[in-house]
Image 1 (tube, rainbow, N blue to C red):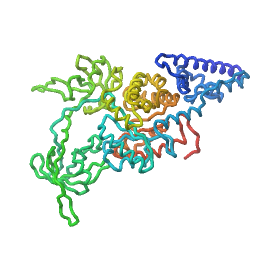
Image 2: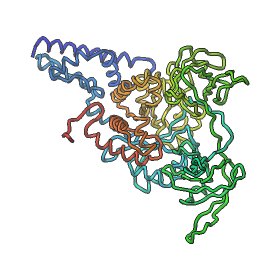
Image 3: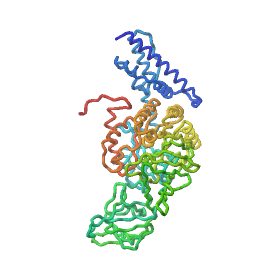
Length: 612
């Protein structure tokens, strides 16, 4: 080997090592980390931030060409890696160099696993990555769902505080604890704070009526039955995966239904009609058919009948249909359309036209946090419904922002209620915790194992939550910081450095909102950086949003989603959303993680024997 080159490399790595140490000391002297001791993982994180502050690719390539460590996999043990390279170069150049004690890769791995266990509990014997499942409302009543999920491999349940209420959450908790005891399986419960509801307000609704339509051919013969789905009134209809009109039933009736049961009634027009139950759907709704078109409204009287063993219809009960909401008005916008983002309107509404058909007022988009509007600037972008609709701010007034649609599909975008609204160009100045969050924390501190903190953007947000937990005597309740905004990504280093030793902490990569905030093209790069940063701090990561979503919602496997799920093995926990095929999806994910773990851990790929 060229002695001059080796000596040069030794000097470069030694200078790099000294720069990393000095820069880390400077970073940790920041007043925002006041009165905190420098633990091994905080020091390593500071070292890693210093290491990544310069472009090291020329040095890495030179080291790699000499078959010396390229520094690539040093996230968890930065100083030990640098000093190991220096020790090797010192031997080759006959220089006197004695490496100082530093956190080893093995120690870092043990620390990360200990932190992961403290938050998510122990891992099953066949895999290290934990599986988290989001519970739908029906989990509070369904006797079979939670035990099935536990037996398929769920290690942690997520309860979304943006939905339902404390009464329903308590029923879920009791079912989880009972299932744990019965099946001798253990799991954690994570409650996800709703945060500021940056979502569309309800869309103006029509009359509460469900029109069940049949189809007939040219001579009037029936070619397609009218279809509808019945669900228990306690359930959120958003949890029902059915394209047919949805009609609620009293819970006591719904749980006793059987195939071929019939409902006899007079519809809203006084017409006598019959609806027959066909089969139970995976989400526990009932598919039903009608031979005649009918109009169903709340308060109709239904006679429930069943065919007995002798083939005769037997009356079982008579009941009244519960209340339900009307269908949302059709609001569709196209590229180039004008919109008004309103702080006064409580509902999203269609455009208004005068008697001559001339537009008087464009579509009004109403949001649940109207104070955001005053923080907008001309030119800021706004995205709605997971990025389906893109707009730009053209003008801001006291109570509204005037927008122009810049992105919409060829068929336009339908405005729906309760859809996410993102403001990627706006550094929103909102309190970290809402009044609802503070109320929900009372319940969480009594019944939860983990609290997920939505829209974490600054270290001061974490401090605010810590103070609320201290007030409730749950100082050490594990916190998962959800990173879902551009500002949250920018400040993640400070968030980790300042909070990592205060209490058990994890990070959720909320890939849905984050992709909209930073752009889908940039998402892959940012995702990798978050994984690296958290590994440097020995902080467990939740890989979230749309994992195996097609399988979960429809029961059909999507090949691209299988690849995405395979990459999730680098995280300590993988989260699934609620879906009609959730138990089946857990089973598939369990198999994927089990097969992938022998091949990859974090950013280290293992050369196991070919499986081809």
